[in-house]
Length: 123
Image (cartoon, rainbow, N blue to C red):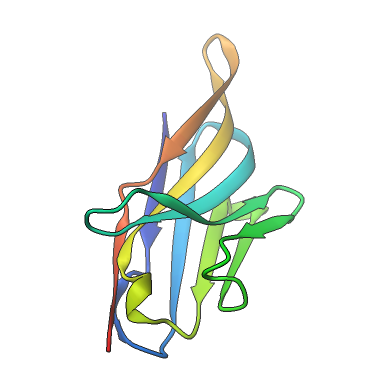
């Protein structure tokens, strides 16, 4: 019904930059919060950044000042600009969205996840 597709991951050297994108598709009425999570091997998933439909943002302390989250509501797309990357940023980054969508029975609400994109930062 609703799908999130991430792109933009890859391999980058320390100090470099990457830009992640996540596009939501389906019978979407609106998206309240969109965010990026990451999970490194052997570690729990953590919130990296989130943004509301009104463009209020929240960042993990570890990325504040280096990462910037933004969104294009018309395209149902969220972006994560990652600058000054370091090896500790290496993880699978997953997109999350709190979606209000249309169904045969009317309006529905649910949390959706993308499949994740690998970000690897070498030293």
